Length: 463
Image (cartoon, rainbow, N blue to C red; front, side, top):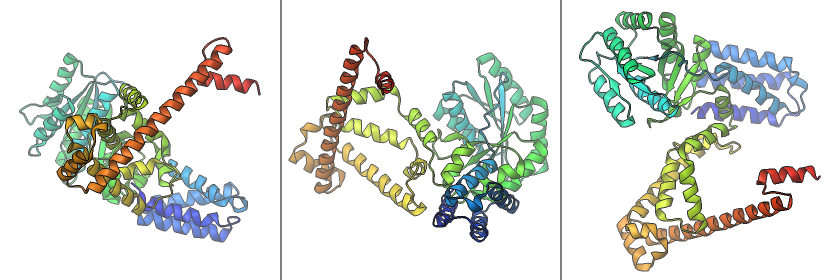
């Protein structure tokens, strides 16, 4: 996401790194390049003018022209202005009402129905009990699509055989109260373009049911057209927030960088993949750091906490300690890695790599290809071989190579690397165990068993 813009902004800032100080001339050059980069990213002209003007004012106000490290100062200014442009701070959903109604709005093709299902998944993870309500009574198979998604994610879908949308919502609210649902997600009807009939129906729903949230779902890849759609919806319905879909496929970023400024409404959620768990809260500061190539380690850690459960991690650690790590365990670990999303997206979260968009795509492509090869290789084994790597001999390797369609050389190389990895894991585990024993011994001498953290604190006190 934002790869094209990110590459250009990083190049511009890199050019200032060779300057001893920012002068009026090279500052103008940098601003001119930033303006061009934003316009090429399909950012709205009003936004570009305001952004450049703010950077210029900040630069003069902070005495950048006489700064000793011009590139770092420029990074700071551009970062702060990007954060401001993207909405300043995270805006959580308002779910204070019981039950809360979330009205999903948008044109056909924006990803509204899929986003409704993704939102239900997210709310379930957060301990809510959501109910999906099929309010699109016009589009063929809209209700069928929502029911199919509901089955996949284990969330109930409320629907009725009528075209009276008010009646559907009214009965859904009563059903929710009777059955303990605390959030209703209304998947409303969309159109190919904004029209009077659609708006009349949405306005009626808004005035009768007073939803807590009116979220406009926007396809981020539509660029400046997304801004026009958002302004029209907001003018008539006063939306409470935005959901940007396909953000992972948007290399330019024009919609995200324009829409908050032009509507005055926050981006609350972003769709960052096709999987039904790929809907995230939007953090302006984290996005700004990613655009400037500074990574997003906080989001990476949060994603890791979601993907790796503590029980599985402890079981895996115990196997590593005994050198019992199997091919099945490797396959399970690889499956969990896939839940992070694409390798390209993962690389974007890591700070300090300095990789271009082409580099990330190349690494991602090769990584995905290697994942598939390993999967085919392990699946060509017998259940016994997967669980007991020590059984591998020449005849088994030849059979696996033939079954997987991989060269014997590749099979031998993978098994060798796997064995080296097992030994390394066992070594790390032994080191950790010995450090734990040392900490315990030191703790006993200090009058009780101390944790490593406490031990370090005590050692600092004796300095």
